[in-house]
Length: 89
Image (cartoon, rainbow, N blue to C red; front, side):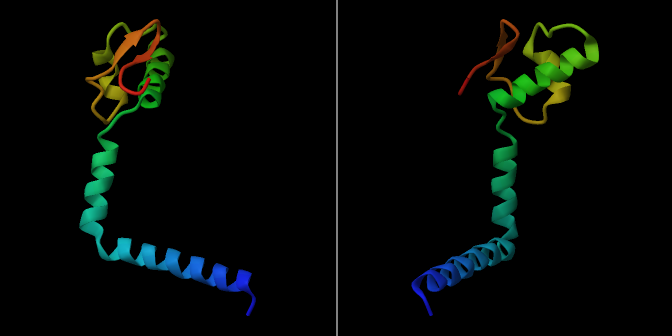
């Protein structure tokens, strides 16, 4: 067996092990997914701004107008010159 074949076999084995561990621990996986899903990003808010404009034909004036377009928490963001401003922007 060549070294590259051994490395490939190890990589495949490790990835299968990681997938199996995730499958056997669904509660932790769900908790982590909910935590990530609740955090909005600048991209999320900017996408909501585009959606708002597409649906209403006008720019949003406050972040509260975007709540129907976003599932996560966007209270830390604001709209400045038509784009999202806040953490990570």
